[in-house]
Image: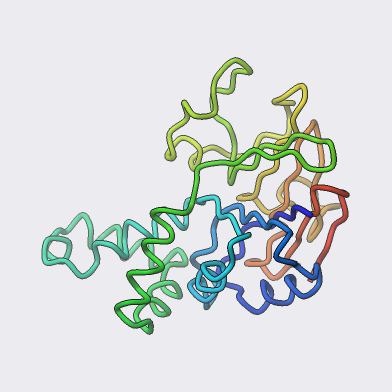
Length: 227
């Protein structure tokens, strides 16, 4: 089976509970649609668990991208003496990065290097799979300036991370677009804490960072799981 969840935001206990709920097997695949970092207490515990599994595939979100940039530079003399970096770092901390930095500093130097390498080398911009006879495009956020004839590879990471999902339109004729980023209650109060489907799209960030349930979708069957 193929499963997808997103915007874990450091909620390691919810992540582990979901793995038990779906009974994830080695033969299954789990796609994480970005924003593992920030807001919650243990993003790197999630990453260290994912590192031990050959069937977990992370897609980068803007919080992961920012964490990689900030954590890779924060101990360098150049960054410490750069007012622009210090200002950006302080802004990041105030917007949810403090928990990420706190956990990162608790790791050994070897583990710090491992998790940064994991983000840098294993987090992809998007993924495409076929499950249950349906084709899916998996991306953290939206597809800006979309054209059906435009290759997904032509988008830069920054373009994909900056765009908001747009449920007012249908992107593909023969593919379902699955996104995270924006909590589903922002689209419809009726879908607070629940997966949102519209116009050939599925939004799966149900807002665990805002106190709602963590959602997971089985792409093969359409079954929804919540913890």
